[in-house]
Image (cartoon, rainbow, N blue to C red; front, side, top):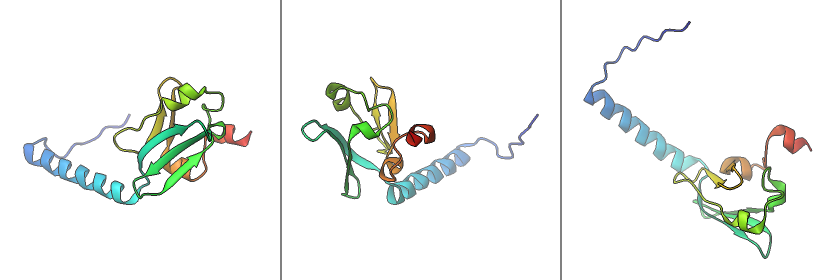
Length: 115
């Protein structure tokens, strides 16, 4: 059994300190991690197109990605970004793909990528 000794009392001052640290961590992530600004499905070229916050554009054919390979154009068009821009998500397909992973060429699990 693991017991943790919380040596800090929960005070308003401690809470403010933690909020300040969290905001700084978010700013650091925004400045250093790949994040998406927008995403859409281009049916004429059969591509998922992601505009990154650094102004680069990344695209890939859906057949490469786990969970998208058999999706209809309507399902592919129903894509959205969370506010962080750290992933793309298809609710009806229950698919969520991370931006850094996609840009690195990781389109699914290791098992799926091996096929």
